[in-house]
Length: 241
Image (cartoon, rainbow, N blue to C red; front, top):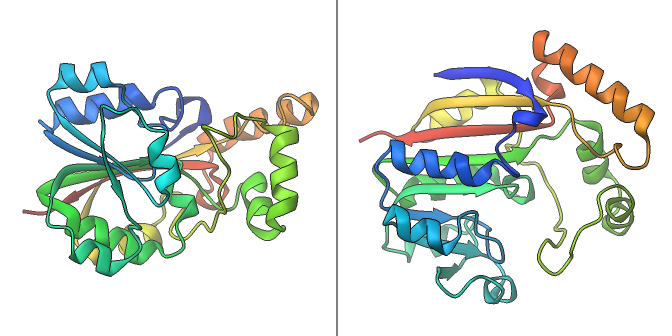
């Protein structure tokens, strides 16, 4: 089990996601991938999928989001927090992946239990997500959604057609602690790696001095980690055979 703490510049949930996912696929001989919540924006493009020789399904709650997805992908409209949905789905996957999705899940326990059921024996699941107690994400959780929407436009504006904002709950979205590890193991997963990341870029455009202080804090915490102060994490879990 790899437990580590790093600066958010190494976080594989954004620009580095295609490389991170491709490495998981090739190093684990993956043939059948489900990406959760990727509707409009699958992590890998069609050319990469063809080169890897894999079957790739993009999932989302929203039919509207799935309609935005490239037509080369298989799609599955489903709520992975719904136990009945998973019971009625017979297909199994070698790899189930998500990025920047798990913080939006209401019931982390049921979500991961469902993922466990959807995996083939020996399959793996990997997730990149934001964690609760970093200040921007704690603010996002406790203030009204309309206000957090306005703050996002100020500090991190985006194309809302391709990258809509969704409510965040942070259920089971924490940095690598013994308590979190025990939760995953209680479902039956083996924790392969669990990495927490410090720092964020939300002050960079509007508050450069605060951004500087945030980066200094992040560098200090990498060397002196406090798990509850992570901003992001990634985890890789394996379903035992």
